[in-house]
Image (tube, rainbow over the protein chains, first blue to last red):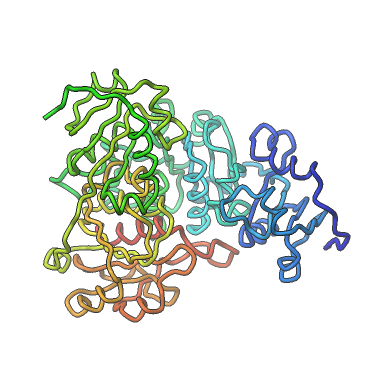
Length: 254
Length: 254
């Protein structure tokens, strides 16, 4: 239902939006913020929109269900936007809560992130997981927060479509590794282009600087390698974690 | 040769480093800035280091050839660092100038970027091009600047190893398209996983929001598609440009 009782932008609301840039307040209130037409309209299909802030012209051209709609001027929206180029719409959503469906995970392809720390990398990984039809991403507790504004922004609306779970990753992998292969990339792994890959599996991607932790490494059952093609020349020693994830997912799905 | 005459950090030097965050000054002075051990040591192997700013402990552990070395305190380096977590080393380099080697391009795999605007995306693409043994990237004039600090940072040292050229892209492609296939990704293209791909070619990647421009589209001789695997479900409509580049390069090289 769309509310037509337009409210004013109060100082309290500005403070609320700003506070949600901090994980502490997001965790406490179970809310998060998204900006821009694509993100807001996509996320509104999966998460409850608590407050929608938008310009008059945006509201006349778009329909988004929200508990509360606040019409703002272009100047006012700058006070709540975290982006360099403020968007005509900013929204507060309720955080979705997903339960882990072990049966679904044991019958499909799942990503596990071992302390991926950059919010942009996490968001890019969620977006590409959505593209490759991956329904679940299992994150170690040290992984970036999915509701960080930079993560939400980088998902381009996919944040509501992929189920993100934060768990004790070694414990989770220990509990499931006898039922499904657990893949990871290592320098001494098998060439991913030459290996026959199954339809089901968990693919672990490691931290930007340190790769997969030693504790998680022990739980990997299949070691993969993305070969470097600058053989004989000095070259990059590694790939960005989102890039490596894309190459691995592409190989599993092709 | 390493200079042992350590200089002081003057206001003029701080101003110079800061000015190089702007393209106008980078173009005028033909200089750029890099930060962090990995970036600085890698780039120093390919580009002339004009000034090296580093802490005493960094200097005692690393050897980088530089015309001028300025020892700075950890507090001082904060005044020149553009990063949230200041690195113990910041360096000013001369911009490398590369001529287009048509023979090399006609005999290998080359990327062409049609107005890729995000500096981080450009840097990530340079890093993965280096990984996949791609020697040249041809950029339209509207593409982000390779010497933007965010680009340099995202290349993780690969900026000196891949030759980046800024050209009138339609003109360049017109001049070369009879000698080498020109690939681009489109919604009506051929499935990249099913197509036999050659060892030689130019792969055009488009702008983050608008894809490949209509002018450049006309010069594409082979239309490719990266299929979406969330068939039947609502999904992401596109991939981040660096992610799409990685998938295409992986298919060409595998």
